Amino acid sequence: MEYWQAFLRFEYANEVMMICGALLVFIATLKIVRSSLKLVFWVLLAGVGAASVSYGMSGSPINLPGTGNIDLADIVGPGKNMSLDVLEVLCVKLSEREEG
Image 1 (cartoon, rainbow, N blue to C red):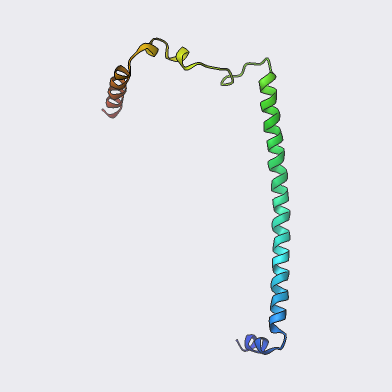
Image 2 (cartoon, rainbow, N blue to C red; image 1 turned 120 degrees about the horizontal axis):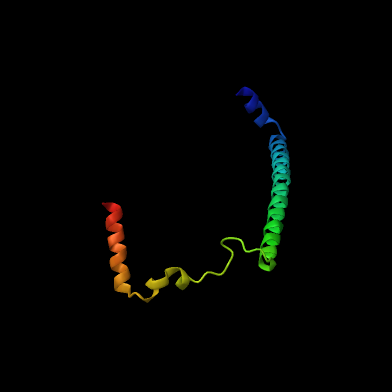
């Protein structure tokens, strides 16, 4: 503790502390920026890859599952003509069956 007190009594203690603090901030900022630049590079690379996949899928003759335009009415089939009340009753019965 007496070393710290002796340092604080030093005439240029504040300036030395400012210089050391500024040096630490500068080094830390350089490290952060350097690691962030690596991260930005990989994020940009992933974005370019995702964009190329998206562009390729839009013009590709290959029909992968989940990429086609599916109309909900085609999936529902006969249920598309049901009223809202009938669908509500069916949902209640389904939830009762899952609980029981």
